[in-house]
Every structure is written in structure tokens, then in C-alpha cells.
Image (cartoon, rainbow, N blue to C red):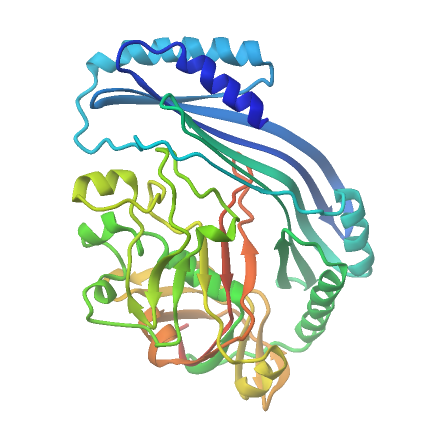
Length: 440
């Protein structure tokens, strides 16, 4: 597909006139999808698709469009050429854009991760064996995801990654269930079995009489998936320069130096990890790592090409929303085998749900505990806890309330498949927190 993309970009470049510049962005995948219910395959299929986004630029005017690729080179060339003609007709009627910015320095790159994954058939057989006897529902997605950039200046960038994602829940009865995930570029049957056995243990705990607890402050362990919900919401306008200059970032207090997180908390956008493209749709190359929070203090921002032009700073190759695509947080000293012991008496929270801001300037969030929140006494799981609402500030959860972080961060790939498989990821530890505020 890489060769076909480069050929198509060359052919479309030949359609340009005068000082016109063309930017091309490819999104493509070859993926298997399998849906399971009652630990049996209910639906299976494969998708091979690609789309090309093109942006036609003439001085300070520009216009964009995209079309689905057929796989037939001649057909795709003809469609692209016709689309360029349509865009050219629109250009004179568009206003000049003072914040238009694209890479004029040719920097070609290529990144491939062709991991040796099992076939989807073999992986599903392992899943069914490991989950035998469980009321398991879930979806498996695996295969190759490809992104490419090309421009009429001669720049060529390519990204290709092979990965899998299995997102599943195991039901006990009624609304009692535990939600699980396993994803990555390296498959381990032993790791799948370990996670499935953990799900069995949690489902057994869910069979006990549930406990209703009073609102108040509790010692809790937020599993990596729960912490991921918090960082996902933080990423919504939190780390972007545009939101910060517009004073709408929930992390404004940290940016201004008026608040900070615990010194053990460091957050990075780690493009060098190779889980998402290291280039943007304007041809800018992302730095290997951007330190967002270092030692608890806010450090650097994610900057799109448009924000870079508007504010006169260097771009970090961030997307238009200036949100992380490969977020990482350093681990702490809490060993997995010691989590329950160190929790002592309190709540083990596997997941958080329906998060939103209750006080955006204070970075205070609210959400629900829902699945597999367990009451722990003296380091032993006692009972499931009925659904509770929390309302607390990130500056407290990851600040004064932080006791420790788990030693081994967990890789979580995005399960989003709207339009196509997403390449976003987070690699986060769990967090042991004192005084986590439950309000309802």
C-alpha cells in the first residue's frame, strides 16, 4: 500500500498549476473484528479500507476534502484529479487564512512495526478456552493500521503498526459485571489467562451481597483503566496551547504555577514509542517525547501547526485538538502483589464511567464507579459496592491525596473503531489515593 500511496501522490502532484501546493494524508487498515457473547463467536468479519485526505493550497488560501480509495490505481487517480479540480474552483472565493502553516522543509520518515501476532482464529480459540464457563461478552480487533503523508514538495512519511485489542466484560448477574481489556503489539497466552483468572476472581466477589457505603472520603486504589478515564478527561483541552491561551484549559492553575501535582507524577506524550504516527497532516514531525508534567509541575504544551502560526511558537506536530495520542505516566514503587495489603481498608476501583467536569477551572471531575468496585478490609476483598458518584479534583487525587503509584504501568490501546481503528494509547500505572471523595 505504501508504494501505491506514493504513486498516487506523484500523479496528483502532476495535476497542480502555478504555485499550488498539495498535501495528502492516507488513513488505512486491514483488520479482523470478532464479536463474542456467552464466550462464543457470534459475528466475525474483516475490513480492508483506505481514505485519502487532500488539501489544496494557493498562497494563503486552502481547502480540503477526502475520498474513499478503491484499490484500483487508475480509478483513484481519476477521482483525486477530479476532486482537485473542484477544490481549485472554490479557492478564489475563500478568505485568506493568516494562521495557515504547513511544513516546507522536506523531512521523510518511515516507521513499521510488523509484530508477529497469532491469527485471529488462533487468538479467539485461546480466548474461548481461557473464558470457558464465563458469561463473557466482548469484541476482538486486530491487524494492520497504516498512515501516510505526502506533499508536492517531495516529502513522504509512512507509519504502519500491527496490534490487537480485546475488550470484554464478564457478567455475574443483573448489573453486576467486571470489565477487562488486553491489548498490545506482542501477544502472550499466559497474560491472557492471567487476566481471565483475575476476572473470574472479581466475578466471584461480585456474587456476594453488595454493600452500600455512606458518602465521604475513602482510601482507594484506582486501577490503570480507572486512572485512564481521568487522564482522558484531562486531555480534553488540558494540554493544548490553544486552550491555555484561551484560558479554558482545566489545568490553567498548573500552567500558571498556582497548583501542582505530586512530585512523583510525570506525564509525557511519547511519540517515539511508535504506537501512533510521528507526523501530522501538515507534514511536521513530532519530537520523540514532550514533557507535559514533570515532577508534578506543568512543563510543556502540545502545539498544533495552526496554534504555532497564531502564537508564534514551534509546533509539536499535535493534532487539531492538541490532545495526546501516546500518553505515558511514570510508575511508582507499589508492587502488584502488595496493592491489597497497602490499600488496607477501602475501595478497589477497576473502572470509572461517565466522567465530566463539575468545576473545570479547578480541574474537578465527577463520574460513577459502576462495574467491579470492591470493598476491601485488612487487605482482603469483602464485597462489591453499589454504584457511587465521585467528585474530586485532579490536583488532590494526583496531588496531596496520592499515596503511591503501581510499579508497572499498563499499556492500554484505544478501543475506538468509529470509521476505523484508532491508534491512540495510554501507558499508565494504578494509583493508591487517600481521601477520594464519594458524594452520592
